Image (cartoon, rainbow, N blue to C red; front, side, top):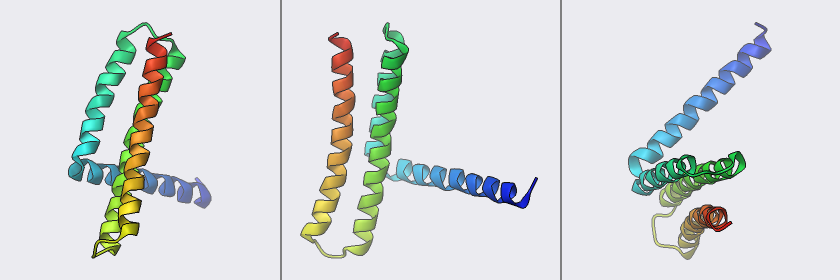
Length: 120
């Protein structure tokens, strides 16, 4: 294996390790992430229990994962804001509220997808 391939394999391995560490840290500290995960399990179970097309299932599963991704990003925003902002600041509040809004909008997208699929 060439040095370039070894370096790329190591970089990929590190990326996987760091990503897993980030998710595990968010999982350990964020009840909301765990709640969204339970919603995703229910949603995925329903998606496989109902007579849906492959595309419909894929959409539901992908949007569920995007909700989890948004929640992890929101956690990152909150952690950074809490780290750099020792006193209440309207910019810190805005950053946290925008992160929360991103999660809400992603969850609404999932709800809209379910509504469209079920009402077809």
